[in-house]
Length: 147
Image 1 (cartoon, rainbow, N blue to C red):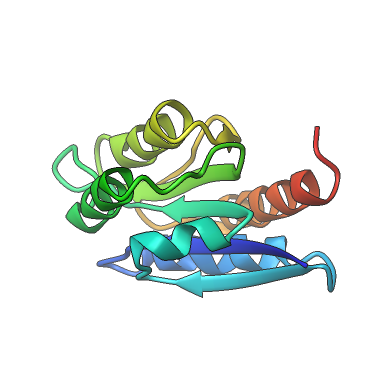
Image 2: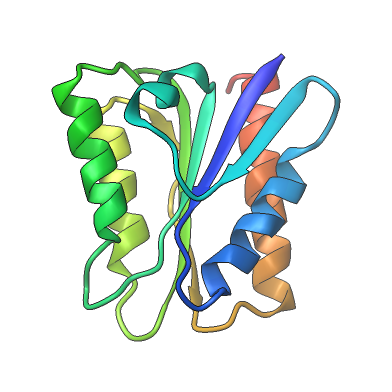
């Protein structure tokens, strides 16, 4: 069984709404297990086949929890090479966090990433939530049928 982690941080609930939609979309069949969580230990990352991260942008930055997670994973030598990765997030005025995380996934950890990141300005609307479901579905399909 393939395992997908949908990891998110949300202060206002906007990115959490997106995370729930991504997780819903990723549950395409019984061969996919989806874990929706707001915290994991660095060593847990390697147990997933795909990692989808939802990060809001605050003050042009990604949440410090994700900075620490990636730093600790790098220091521990955790390999994510070849795993599927994607990002999404809400923002008020800039939206850099999902882009920065996707860059780290791709360049530092050599993951196979879905580009571009999915962004929502403030509150995600129905169209954005539908796109979130499609993102989850796409990552799950890539696991079952690699491109």
